[in-house]
Image (tube, rainbow, N blue to C red; front, side, top):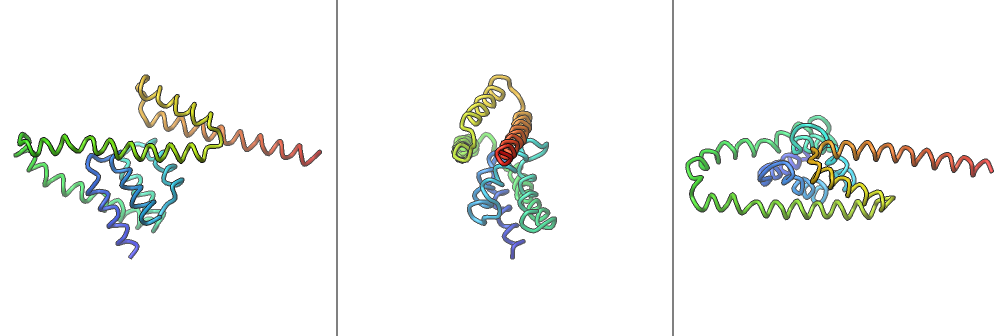
Length: 193
């Protein structure tokens, strides 16, 4: 039964993830965190960041991670097949229709109308992640600096998002390691006194 739920959840993500990539992230979140509770908010956020830092499509990386967490290697395989299958089938069918009707007002309008919907979905998810990150942050100043530097790197320096995420992961790891070591030294000095 779990494999069936995995297949259905990821098939739905694949079929409704119009535009791929970032447009699928809110669908992953709804199915895997809110509906089935396969992963926590924190796990989802961490693995989304990692998926963005690694090469390849986000959808298959998230499907592999969550499928593996739920049912091991077979779960990862089922989730990946399910998330890719509708995309392949629909793409083959729709390409024929779009090539024949691409200039028809209805088809053109449909393609143009989906853009704002995707922007809103991505914006809502971004706001939720920012609110959770802000609430759980040990340092509000650190989050503010990270947010500011990320915006500068992405908007003005035109850095690839994977590079920005990779740097953020490395800096966060280094800061956390330093912070824990500092705390242990302080605890050791207080215990000796």
